[in-house]
Image 1 (cartoon, each protein chain N blue to C red):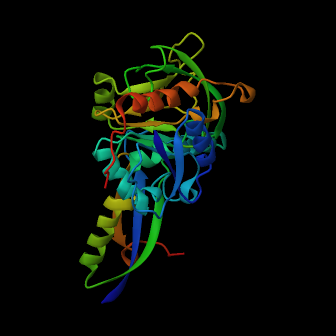
Image 2: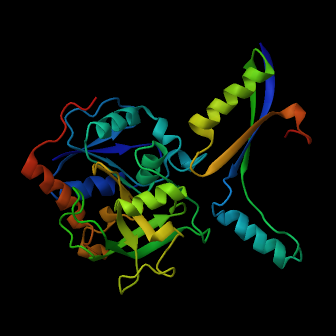
Image 3: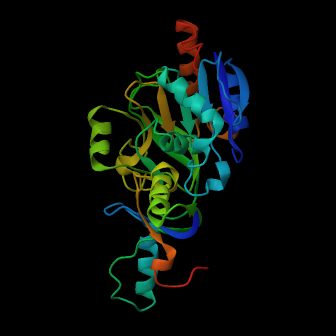
Length: 90
Length: 238
């Protein structure tokens, strides 16, 4: 078993009103960034998971998303190995 | 009527709901979220509040608590279940009602009285109201914006599953009368079978004139009289 750091991204589904994104969009405009076209606010879950392989770690996290972490009515999700993503983990 | 009020960690409307059910003569018990069964209850009431701090999503963790397995079984067996505010959010998360409640369009927590129009009076929960009757009932929520996919929304309207809507004094579903951005001003819905209802407003806080409104009373008398007439609907739920 290996410990895999995962990054799970959950975002509002396209077409769904995202009031937080809309508010931030307006604030950025008023601060002088008129070119900002769309802002949507999601969340990122950082998780370390023991698994046999990277594939099984990702598959398990996807199952967690379907069962709990994301609401399929309002949210889409993407799971990736954190090491494969750019940027530092907190 | 034997009524169960389920208490989750973070529930805050459970005592109000207890009092409201007692007000119409129900034999009420609190049921803690760690309990496993609802045997002997006629009605299950899920209160408002902020179960599990609304972490992840409102109602998302509550629906995994032990008692919810019994609530789902109770509902599937035809037992009446009413979810108010956080209880409504939990019923949606549990899949007992379609859709989801997302952040209010204004991003502001809304705590005030609103006007509701009763669009269904042929349900267990609303038969003591008149069709189109306007009710003054308080709301208190940050995530009350009802959303679902287009097909679900159209089905709700086609099948007449919307029970309450936010309206103005003329009974019209205007944007100004909509406190949270809900599609078609939806404030409460019921399932096809007619035994599971969820609503964001708080009828249990509109039970006494001294506190501003008695417009919630008829919801509880509707439920109670359903049982006086028909006897217990479900005894062996699990």
